[in-house]
Every structure is written in C-alpha cells, then in structure tokens.
Image (cartoon, rainbow, N blue to C red; front, side, top):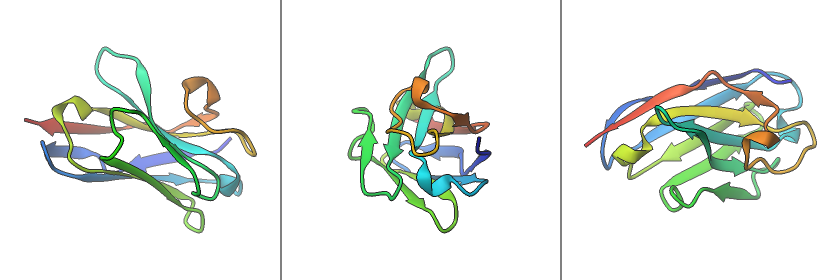
Length: 125
C-alpha cells in the first residue's frame, strides 16, 4: 500500500486553471501507474487521467482531453494534474489513485490499489 495526499484544489472561475498535486509515501512510487479520478456530487467516481511508471505514456477521459495534463516526478514521489480551460462541469472532488506495484495501467476503479482523501475543485460560471 501507498499513502496519498492531494493538494491544490479550490475555487476558480470558468476558463481558469488549477494544478493538483499528490504526494505519495513509500519506495514503490516509481513502479506504480498513477491516476486521477473525480466524483461530482450525487454521481459515480469517474476516471480522469493516468500515467505510466516513467511518465512515457498517459491516458485521458474524452471529457478532459486537450485541457488536462497529467505528469509525475518520481524523484519527489509526486503526481500532478494541470487543469486548464476549466468548466463548471469539472466541479468535483478529485482523487489521486495508485495502481499496484509493477501493475498495469489504471483506467478504472477496479485497477486502483490505493486512494487519496480527495480535494475539492469548484468551477464557477
């Protein structure tokens, strides 16, 4: 297991930007696919983006392609989500997620081994 702590959420106007960070504990961060999910009030937790062990591959939900960028710094045990051109529909609690060590790509909740506590992102119109 790995402990995950998100930061960087907040209130932003439509069209604005936010950068989320997720700091991970443990020595196996660089061997795990990492991902971001989000859950709007009253809705299911949905996949947003994921990134491979070395950052060479990334995957995005159609709803955020071209606006969000996932990245990681293995030296800092941190994964980021840069969110640009934010829309009110992006309002949700954003969760950092880690796949199992030496595991496959994370694109669904079933692939997730560890979750962060979540950070609120609110986009006003």
